[in-house]
Length: 207
Image (cartoon, rainbow, N blue to C red):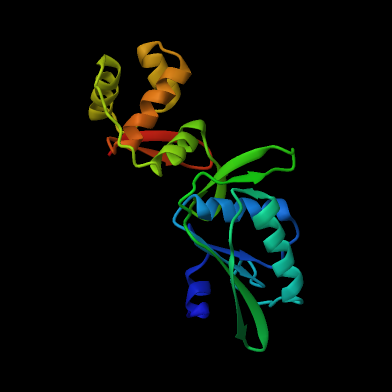
């Protein structure tokens, strides 16, 4: 593994730098967002700007990460550890593989379990629709789409417009949010529309 090259690439969807581990909640959130996505690596002992500080005690960091993976994530995660020496400093590399038991939840400061996904270099709270898509995407049961007027209206709207939000869809057809979410989950799973999550909003486009 060329760690220096990784660091030069900077933080992103599958890479996160941590100077040190200060809280199990925070690190669980990042690990869960990797597992719910395509996996990722945590580099412990690396500053946000890519500077290498190294870890003081890898045992302590390992203990915190293992505790976070087992008690602050459900289903529990199985981090893979590797120690890499750079200029006499130790960087602890923690790999989280993409999971086949999605979604994973992280325990928040509020004592509740939340699903996170990775958006660029941030771990973002997943919406109800994304959680449902994660829950069902592993079952491979296939989605039988029956296009009612509601689905057709959505696709026609996306034919004319670039994007739509759940709220716009509810307003367009004057229906409940729950009904709109159910339709959108099915359309995302069948690959007809795509869901886009940013830190500020979530929207849908034609696939």
